[in-house]
Image 1 (cartoon, rainbow, N blue to C red):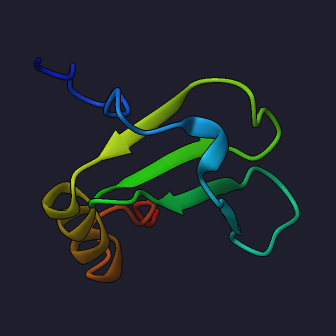
Image 2: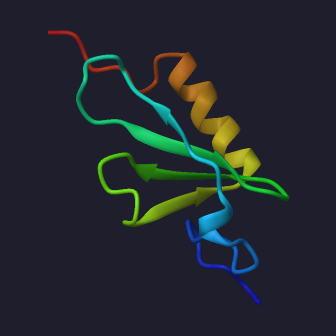
Length: 78
């Protein structure tokens, strides 16, 4: 069975995930992140914990982190 891109694998029970909060420190919009048993990461909006979540494979998550750490997602100056 193929899992749609971004969807939590069907064998993973969403209620069993242990989310932790990641914020920019500005008191605004935050995301919750959970490491998925068997690999990957689930991300959700902290103000809507029962809403949609996005699943990333380990490779996708590492690519995102590398880009974030290198400034790829920084707001342009000027």
